[in-house]
Image 1 (cartoon, rainbow, N blue to C red):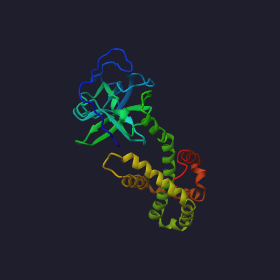
Image 2: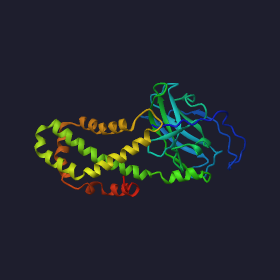
Image 3: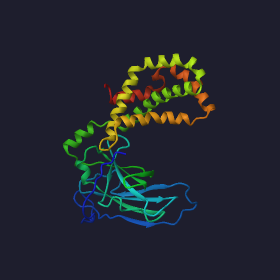
Image 4: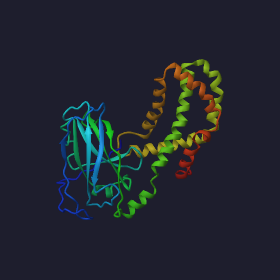
Length: 306
């Protein structure tokens, strides 16, 4: 996760009782225990209860959004779990963490409860890489080390427009590709490497399939060489955005994404793999747009050239 830590020094309690551009309701972190629900949950759960201001309302630099969530943790251990507020970044999966100056100190004290979180927005108005309208969500994380965690759940997203974005921020938002574009890119990336690694897995696990798959695979790769080169380049752009501000590299992220396909196929039984190998010539003999034409159209609309 690409996280831009945002913290405010001092108290979150702001004067004023009426929410407006310059005066917002007071906000402070709180946790309230709940009884174990019936039936008892089988997995960790996190539910968004609401926010002040409500999702869809305009926000301003002085706004502190109060967010209410309900949580249920199956394998609870005191001092290990935390709820974290995130603002969506330009690339899907990248977020800015919104802190109240006490990040890492609001560890949950109960296995079941309700929590009120506070999101001071002023730092986000000048932050690079934040997507507007603002998209906020809460995640449930288990701390596994000083800087490491396991993500267990996250809420639905809240959305907040603002009339107070600077001209620079407005121009920046115009250049951001939509989430639809990234979903389309993921789909064509999946098509490209799922079939590539299926071919590799088939000829490795069942060497006799080389005789029927090698020629179609070679033709498929040559016919789609320009498309596949473009997909790889666009995905590298995406990973470059995603890892910005972290100690990871786009190349390592691309390598990991490809290896996910190999690991998935390794887990398949011989029966399942033989079925995939039998179906593969149909894909290799067809045109890419027969399978991913809709996604290519969506991708082309926002990335016409590279």
